[in-house]
Each structure stands twice: as C-alpha cells, then as structure tokens.
Length: 377
Ligand SMILES: NC(=O)c1ccc[n+]([C@@H]2O[C@H](COP(=O)([O-])OP(=O)(O)OC[C@H]3O[C@@H](n4cnc5c(N)ncnc54)[C@H](O)[C@@H]3O)[C@@H](O)[C@H]2O)c1
Image (cartoon, rainbow, N blue to C red; front, side, top):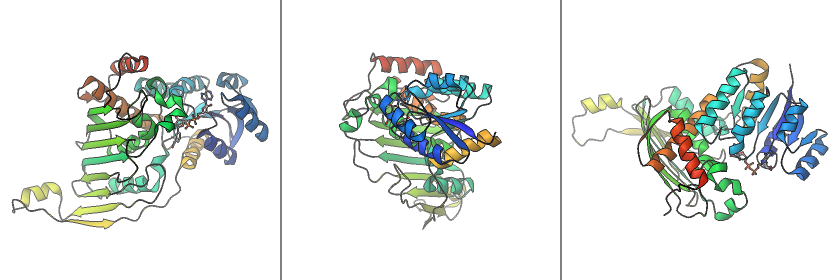
C-alpha cells in the first residue's frame, strides 16, 4: 500500500483542518466526509468529488476508507473510535483521547488487538517551546526534575459556551477547563515530567452557567519524585501564565507564557546553579546563603509544528510501521490525570494514579446525570 484511503468525521470545526491536510497529503486519497450537518457535508463533498455521509456507520459499511480523522465532540471519540477500530480502520482522533480513562483503555486495547494505529491530536508537543523544553530536559540541562509550577490563565465568556452546547456538560465534554482548554497542557506536563502517581485537587465553577468546572487547583507527585502544582482558569483575561520546571542542576522558566493557544513567541530562561542541589545543600556554610543561579535566554528550536506533523507521523506509521508521534498510550496520561483531579476534588481526598476505573466511572455517571454537582462559588 502506498496510499491511504481517508475519511474525516466532523468537518465544521477543527475537522476542516484535517480535511485540508488530507487533501494536501501525497499519500492520502480523501474518499469520504461525514457530518451530521447534511447541507455542509454534501456541499463540501460535491466540491471535492467524494462521498458524503451523515452517519459514520454508512461510511464504514461502504468500505471506502482505511483510516479516519475523528473531529467530533469529546464523548464521540470513544464511541466512534471503537466502532472504527473494530471495523479495521486506523484512527486519528482529536484530543482528548476519551472522557474517561476506562474508554481510553478500551481504545488502546482495540487498536493493539488489530495492529491498528491510534494517533491523538496533541499537536502542542510539536511546537517549538515544548520541543525546546523537552530537548533541554532530556539532554540533562536541569538534572533530575524536582518541582513544577504551571498555570494556564485565559478568558472564555458565556457566549463561548452558548454557541456549542456540548461543551457545557459532563456527559459530552467530560469536563471544562481541564478537558476542553488545558488537556494540551496536561499532556505536555506528563510528556515532559513523566507519570503522576498521586493527586490532590480542588475544582469549581466561579462564573459560568455550565455544568463543568471553570477553575482548577491541583498538586501532584510524579513517579520520579518531583512535586507539581497547577492552576487553570478561564475566568481571567489572558496574561502572565507561568511555567517553571526546576531540576537539581538548574531550572527552566517561562515568565509570561504566550503560547496558550498557538505557537506564538515565548521566552525560555535557563537557570543553572554553580553545583548540584544535593552538593549545595551539603556544603553551603552560610546558614541563609542563597547560592547564585545564572540565568540566560534559550534559543528556541525552529522545526515545523502543528497538526501537519501529527498527520505525517500517522500516515507514515500506517505505511511504514512504527508509532505515530502521539499514540494512544502516551495520550492516555492526560485523560488519567484529568480523571484523577476530578476524583480527588469531588471526593475530597488524595487519589493514587493509576486511577480506579470503576470509581471514576461511578463518579462520572453521578456528574453526568446531575445527581452530583461541582461546587459553585
Ligand atoms: N487539537 C486542537 O488544538 C483542537 C482545536 C480545536 C478543537 N479540537 C478538538 O476537536 C474536536 C471538535 O472540536 P470543534 O471545536 O471542531 O467542535 P465543533 O462543535 O465546532 O465541530 C464538531 C463537528 O462534529 C460534527 N458532529 C457532531 N456529532 C457528529 C456525529 N455523530 N457524526 C458526525 N459528525 C458529527 C458537528 O456537526 C461539527 O461539524 C473536539 O474534540 C475538540 O476538543 C482540538
């Protein structure tokens, strides 16, 4: 096979980008578009001279695709994804992989059982700021990671939710600022630092007439012993979001993160200590001495980023073997962390990761049915 027959499910939002990337890819033959909006899907398909469907199952029955992008509301990623995998298709699903980690498990298992590729739309990993941070961490520039401080601050008015009702509910969106806006950041945190093993969190809704949370505060312990704190909110105009990752040899700091929604200009500072922290702790004689940290700006890596890189890696994995850049197993970490944060906050306890799937599914059902509601302030 040197060409992949391709379908896109959900075409009006970010799915439009998947359509364009598929059209432009030399190893993709775009053969099908699917959307509930009949007029839109018919008009676009006619323009491209390909088949239009309003029900993805009809596309599956037609047998005209080898792989699909899924760019629908969150709750459909697992439902549609599992059916596509069971029909033998490779899938590139938008983020988040699923609303519940139990669904993410099922998708990963279904792909593995049939030797199919599963790619997830966490394209932030391909942007130059995270790429540079990853490179610095992996090359040992800051040593073993000890501490992480990460905020995400931006503004979403009520009108943002009014135009897309699915974003308002637990059943469909699976969460608010966590699933919707910051699953990319939580994905970056897990990718850069590693797996969290313990989470203690609070979530709430301060301003919005929606079921899901608009503010989050969480602490986490990572497998490698690092301590992390995050604050995430859509209740404050964008500005002065902070990222700090401190290791035992140095630290990375982005004092005012610009790239909350795209790959805009960021400034990374690399701080280095004159010796490793354990040595400084042992040998510094002045009881209140602050060993100097030397700070310097880092030149950002300038490689191509975005959805195109993910799409290329997905198609390459299908045609030549190997894994897409963001596969199901690595994308599950963000879903698991989000589930752990919600579980910790709603049950008012510290939660161990891996999350107890049954316990989270039970909580999710209570939140989705409305028998349990998040705190409002
Ligand atoms: N990676 C990113 O940076 C990024 C950016 C935006 C959105 N997203 C993700 O993409 C997904 C879609 O978000 P959006 O903003 O494009 O949403 P949207 O509501 O604008 O578009 C969703 C599309 O799916 C269609 N749809 C809904 N149910 C369907 C069904 N059963 N069958 C076929 N089509 C169906 C809708 O008609 C619509 O065209 C979400 O998971 C979102 O989180 C990712």
